[in-house]
Length: 205
Image (cartoon, rainbow, N blue to C red; front, side, top):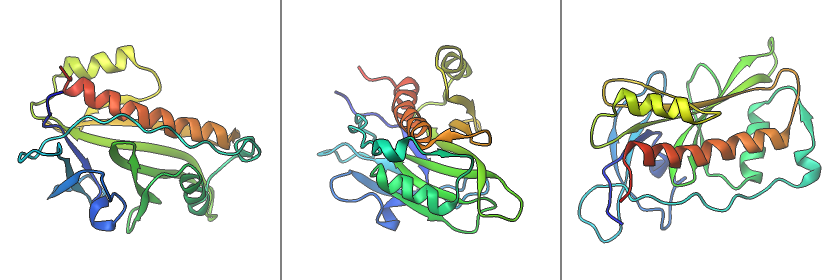
């Protein structure tokens, strides 16, 4: 398998100690994202002197206990988000000084954000959650490539964030009530989608 030069724009999880061990993250290159203090992470192929990204499969997911997954919620608090991420064994770190509660999350082999939206009055509960990541491949993504994703894939939408950066997002509305299992499934849908989107932008041989 050849290595690829795909760059994922995300929060500096390495500096925070969130991605560690044999993960392979090797370089930080600062690049601000809208409203988010962030850095670009390059995932290096092992035994390679070049800063490139090697494709990695999403790990086998950890599942919530059935009694937890069946719990119906109509909103999430920051504490509730972190409880879910811990139960699902995701790496994460809160991103400070943002308009909405925001976390940098390790989505499988990639990284992105989880953002709570639509606050309920003055409470600590929010009725919408967004999963978000940006990607900068070696070559500028073609609009047709982005459009092909939106035509052929479900759940997650894609767009060009700027001339060289593609973005992927998935939104989940909680207001009418969903189970925690539904939220869990949304997280895994986004985790799998980040890997598939990266492969679309820069296919493997």
